[in-house]
Image (tube, rainbow, N blue to C red):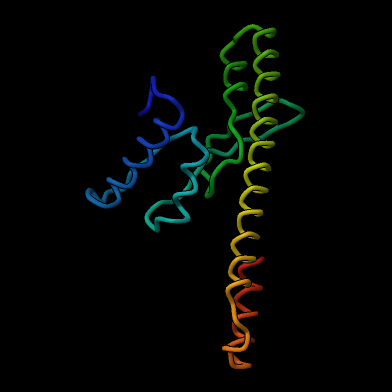
Length: 154
């Protein structure tokens, strides 16, 4: 699914297929993907469950154990599979360099997006507090408002 597509196209197709199967077909389905974002569907759709093949890592060497384990993987092993397939060492080294660079850039972008969302949330709360007239609240309403506000901040 999604071969020859851009990353977001592939993820959109994968998610829509999963949703369609859950909503319309109601059958057990094994769905294998390298899109880590798709694993988050288990948090939104009760019928989705993540299972992965257990991997043993030892000093940079990867062994696929062929045992199924609950949960999702937090990383991919594409470069390791390429090495197992016998691709040249210099190609593998370059792939490792590129992977490190891409993952580093992705982490920076995620941090920047979180900071933007945090600032937007602060602005929303600031505007809400400006509009609030404390004289119109009972002591209990004011306390409940503060409790709710504290939950939204954290």
